[in-house]
Length: 199
Image 1 (cartoon, rainbow, N blue to C red):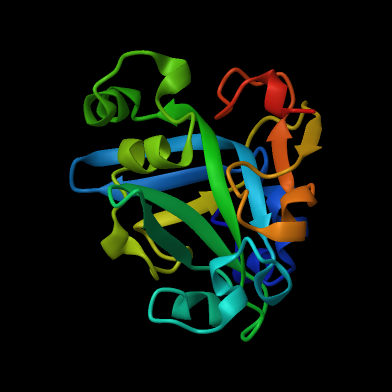
Image 2 (cartoon, rainbow, N blue to C red):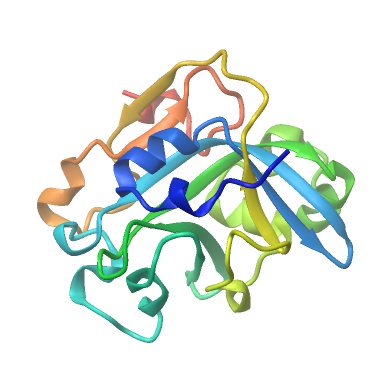
């Protein structure tokens, strides 16, 4: 399938976060190719969003978000787990979409080896888990999603409904805590959290 082109990413974070549900993400490393279908995302809306890293302006870490959309923004949480974000919108509008969970598709044995688990539903059921499964590291931050290392394509299944909820683990974000900018594929077994969060 063809890669999503630049125009897909040059829109606002909420629109892209919703439309990423059902898309496929592909990671190519020297160990092999792995892919999964995106089942859960969160939008982070830059300067107007106190939950966004970029709300405080440009830093060495967030510089990539201030460029044109269509790049990977990868950062560490807890000093050890990577999180993958897709940068979106035009230069100077530092928005992004956190990829929270995937339904594993291709390269499952390699994903399982990286994650050290055979349980399919937990291979990519969280932002840190999916980065390990796809072989993504902090050093990959900034790479173009139009290249051959990491890219997105259309999915093959459009028969699903999309749910919304508040974002997860952003208790520090004042009024932004209540924004319903999390999107997920309803009835998926591969989400990062249980149904209690899907309300």
